[in-house]
Length: 275
Ligand SMILES: C[S@@+](CC[C@H](N)C(=O)[O-])C[C@H]1O[C@@H](n2cnc3c(N)ncnc32)[C@H](O)[C@@H]1O
Image (cartoon, rainbow, N blue to C red; front, side, top):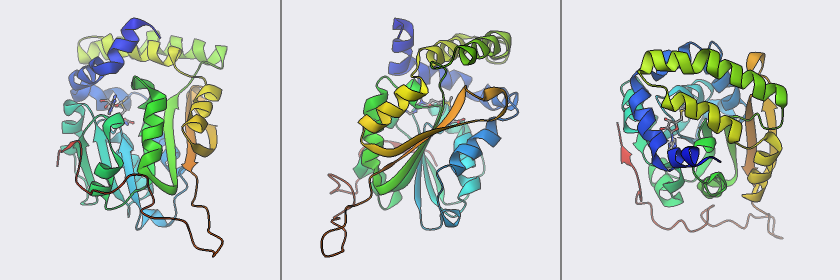
């Protein structure tokens, strides 16, 4: 990782998102598949019954595009959305949302199981993180933190760019960034730092095999990657995994207590509600 990319991930990247918040939705509108692909990844969580009775988290929710994808697929779930950029969250919270969706300011890696339980009313049945894991300083630590937020058997879907395993994907990514994303970003946002960072951070990020390995190392099981269709084939993927279900005791009953390690308090430990 270059020093400038590493520096961005420890804080500057969310400042850049603050700056880009007002134009973010217009930028992603220029990518025709953006919302459809987020819905595809949300669907790949494979949750039943339109999410009825389920508790979901959207980490790195931005202006709410990924939250809207979760809501579209699981309209009956309770959804807690979290982001570290005040500007992006403000733009998200300014939209119309049903009561089952709330937004909170926090760094994803600081979200504790206690805080999640306090907000959701229980451990998460699923976590969705779209374009987040590449942006945090320590992706392995984030994945371990996410595992701790999940109930046993709870599921994770990451929607993320990953091009390191494919020379053609890296070439297409570079052409799209320098031909479209960086010029459009500069024209709309008035500066291009975030978009140059986007290009570089994707090139420097894990390939599919490495990210799946990280997920396994973080204690997730049944990990798998699936591609997006169209020009993003080989570039954007859904990575799914789950926390191991409870082992059944010899009496046939689960060995569960609270369903998560170390959950005692229900007091929020981090984050500020935005709506
Ligand atoms: C590319 S945007 C994606 C937003 C949304 N998930 C979507 O799909 O449109 C990445 C978001 O991650 C947020 N982010 C970056 N690092 C973060 C961190 N450590 N904790 C929480 N949010 C973070 C940024 O503020 C930004 O809103």
